[in-house]
Image (cartoon, rainbow, N blue to C red; front, side, top):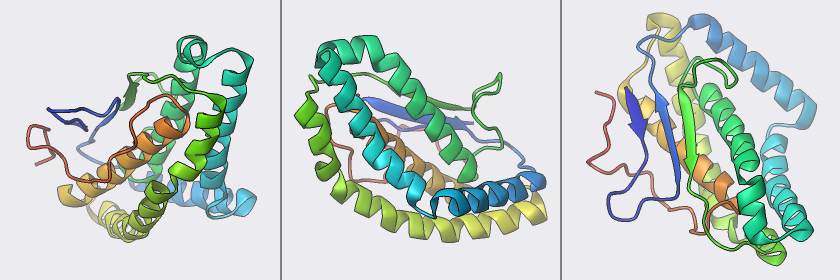
Amino acid sequence: MTKQSSSPSSPYPATFNVDRPSKMGRAHVFLRILILVLASWIIGTWGWMGLLYLGLPAVAAILIAQKSGTRYLTENGDRITGWVAFVVGVLAYLALLTDELPGASRQPVRLKVVRSGSPTVGGALLRIVKAIPSALMLALLSLVSSIVWLIAAISILLREQYPAPLWNFQYDVISWQAHLLAYLASLVEPYPPFTLDTPATTPRVA
């Protein structure tokens, strides 16, 4: 089943959705652990998130400086969105939302961005500061997410699946990350919403 983050009244312009598999492979749990260990060894436990947090606004500012905010969105928007979608796909895989990494023929993880605003160089760099409250809240949620991940991993090893409420929580955390990354990349104008609540009209995993 596909779960999609949206709001009937004022939908956020970055929409993340993913197909939940009926079964999850035990081998992928060990592959995730290996990826996380290698990533921590090479760039540190939180280093890769720091690179994204600082790198996306920096890249956006450079491209905006070379042309303009409007041309950045029209000429580079698809490419930047693709980069962000790839990162979100990796995050969804690591969070135990899917057993498929981005790049395969079938894409269970999808990110749709309706680009908005008129980004400037100063505005792109200022988002590093503006995004701090959202990033701090996400860091706190990630601590809870790590506990959920451990429970889910054990359940997958035993039963090849884990409870829907845990999957839904992981989904909401990755959705928050997708919104924040789109904002940091100056692809959208609105600030990421401070909520994990999913509207009642959104299909949830039973």
